[in-house]
Picture (tube, rainbow, N blue to C red):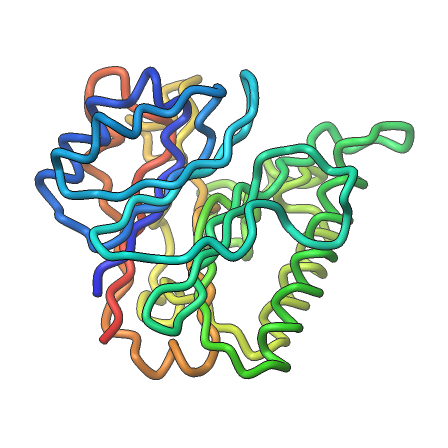
Length: 255
């Protein structure tokens, strides 16, 4: 089974990019993030053989799942805070597996009086609680998406430039480690030890041309899914297209 994740940075702007990628790569499931709008063009993808489910929000955020197979929607928001209206989470079940798509908060700017970084950390704590619940219930799951977390030095070209940033902050790393301590495996890093493989390149300062990127799009696997892991790769090609998203797809294959 081939499952992909891609922050498309506006489905309206990148609709044709997504259609071309689906047609060429034929994943069983594609999870996308940062839809940036209330409207989602379901009818555009049905002729390609994909059922879709989207959680949308005006102008910001948003996540969606494309699947060639039937599935049940379990949650359209991260449990733990009924007041949180941001569209950042969808959890489905297919063939006995929970598949979770997230767009984790960026958290910048980090400041003593700001709200964004505390929101990020609280969101990660809620995510930990949800995944802990799934582990305790022995439900096999995988979680993919834009985590907005740079896990290690080797996941960015210039670590010094990220010091103090919410994506590379000590508290962010602490929360990331708490997820791994549930017994989850970073699928890409488990199979790819070399540095300088990234999923995001900024539009500014020639980052793409200089390969000045960061790895912030991930798949985390529960032990039962880790046992089925075949491959996890990054497809850089879409980032080089005209009017591309600043992210590129990451592709997981499991037995």
